[in-house]
Length: 142
Image 1: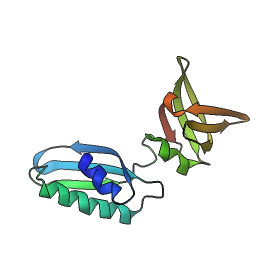
Image 2: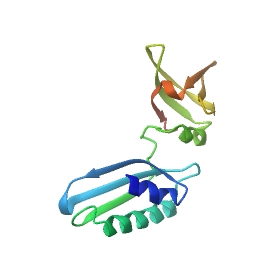
Image 3: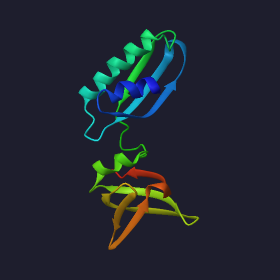
């Protein structure tokens, strides 16, 4: 993961997850990257080239492997506070724990700050601290 993070950082991107499936000649290495701006195919290709060179140079995976570098996609949870800002105006589903109670809120993300986010659901507004969030996902607009 560290190797992928270093490569992504050189392109102003962040690694949000790494998954290795299979072994030997059937290994698949998936690197999911996100950025404060949009993730493009050009960005993924540049990171992929660097990660592949580093993996090969350090002989981290024996044998051949398939490397896939992509954005996390809408179905993956938001994991870091910086990810929320680019989703302002979109609908989110947030599961949180507040004062020992589990809550689930779906609504439009209105704003974010260093501590948390503000969402609107119907006529109600709710503030959710990042420290209270168990899971948050963008809800597909379709």
